[in-house]
Image (tube, rainbow over all chains, first blue to last red; front, side, top):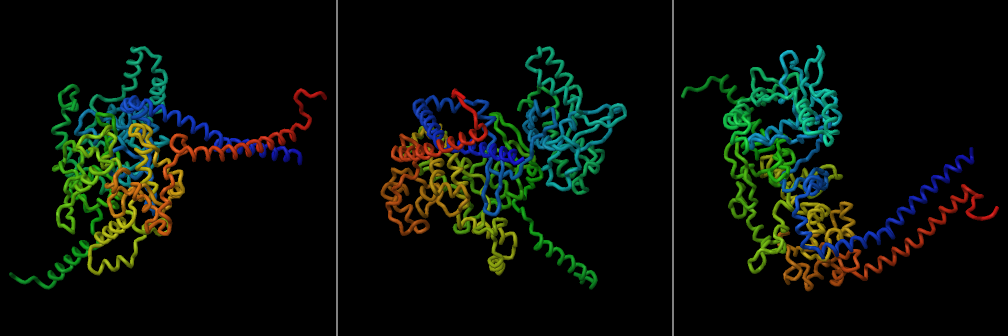
Length: 287
Length: 352
């Protein structure tokens, strides 16, 4: 037994020695080698300065997409405010919400998918932040309609309690998803089967023929209705599509989102822009 | 006019008292949003991707905004083209616009116009002395390259958990000023301006966006990655540990009493880092007043770089080799010793 512990001790000691060797190597000789490489590189940069200027102007995927995820910490002394930094953005964001891991729509369409109508796109993206795509883009048949909507956690995808009462409007870590009736059972519209199908399509996309791709896309989007629900379908007092009370909205919040102020503004927008949004190819559509 | 009956008068008096109580007690915290812009802009998802593929976020975090130096500026004070709701696509904000705040000493509308003039004459101005555009003009900073909305940073912090707002001072304010919201905001604004409005590390990070960018450093033929080399110094290392007392970039590169926008190139005789003025930097009353002016002669932005600082380079290399050359063999011998203890009879090519 004593020998066993001695061996364990020796192994740990050996690991520690190797660890120290690695550290000493890194701060000594590796540092010199690194400096040498950096120097060579900077000399090359200086040499090909003009080329570098041209290179920096190129809008590579890496430069625009991957390098744009910069984070900053503001040291205020009494508080550290950490947030994402968006180039040229003046106002502070002040909080983080993780990506929607459940949605199979955002994997292709991104999480700011609305772009067609310039007067509406920001509003629609604002809703897409806490409303699942299917909530507006899936109109169920009468036999499938349940009127049940629930919140799911963006990270885990699990159904969770309503976040509405405990949070500032719209700053939820959850999204709303409708439920449909399948064989008499309540099933979420973003069911595991649909997610698996979409995932498999994404995995095999490169090896599929154009015809196969078209078929797969058709099947993935089969549940999507041609005309989505519109703003006033929910922002109304009479028969809103969403059961606000059931999904956790207080009376004050319901009054607010169905108030004349909001509904009036929606009317102003929809009167001018909404009809053209629903007619693909019209001139306003390309604004 | 017929006099009101006693009961009605009492009710009227009661209602008026309640009205007064509400008016003075519940002063709205977010008075800047008179246009009710936050009806939509309080939602974090209000965003889009623009035609150049850049993320445009239109969200305003109300609680953070109300703790910023612009808290009192109405939205339309900066976004001047927005006159109605729903509004059209908003134009880019011009920071030089006159906003609705009255500057108390001149009683004129407030504007950042002077900053443009300062910046124009500074090393960061895009136009040279002959009135021509400088080379690589796109590299020169505009307002938002260095500034986001400055947040309140009161003069002291209580155990680093809350702003050190002195109740005693607030009590003195209350003698003359009656609005709580005004007192709180004014106190924060003034005390924020009485010291660095950003931590030295934050200042260094802002400068690093350009001055540590290898492409910009190469294009403008700068001798150093300035913030990297600052990070190698004692001051830079202390700044990394969030020390508030160490000098940041602006403390040395701006002449005392001038705006940060008046930074001049080292060749300019008025520059704080001009050879004739350099001695005053370290010996100024806030830093090392009893030191010799020669203190400033040390190479502040020396890098571990053969071309830029050969003496320091070879000196460092010597100590690196000395350290590595001693410790690495020592560690290797210890390792061999441990292996021998595991395999006491192991041999390579030796006869048994």
